[in-house]
Image 1 (cartoon, rainbow, N blue to C red):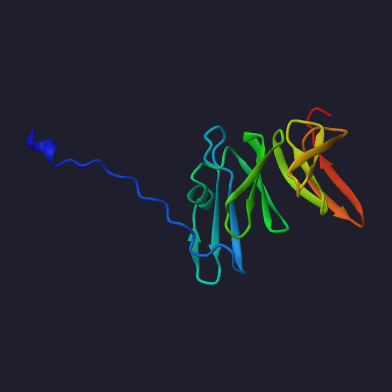
Image 2: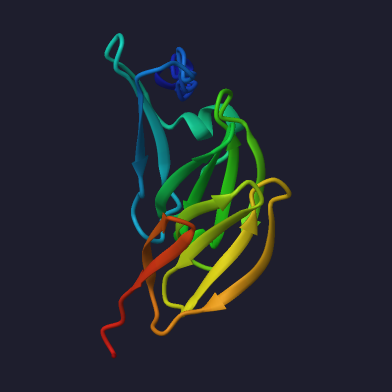
Length: 169
């Protein structure tokens, strides 16, 4: 009994909140995590002082980001995070990193903004590209592609270009 009286359960350390995540020169680090484990994370490297703030999404929002963080795109004052294996695009405030909403899109890969009210979301394991409104956070449509797995997209001189790959073609 004497041996156990001195035992105290360890309390996990509270995650350190970012020092300053909205300054010029910050570098965002997208960590996709391990497939199937829901351990994707977003970190910020502050180039002006060399500090790094790890897993800021979870520290600020109190929940894990999801499974397989594929890419991130800034649109206006929001960051759009494509969480591939969780079938969602998480929208956060660029300054505070607080979640605004989540948009349901199957296996999102990348986002391409083409206007204030239109952005394309490419997908994995599908021949579709989804259209979202980055102001209302709604899926407004989709387009069929000639092959599955749309990846890179480019908006040039008023036209959107899409790159698809499919090993079965």
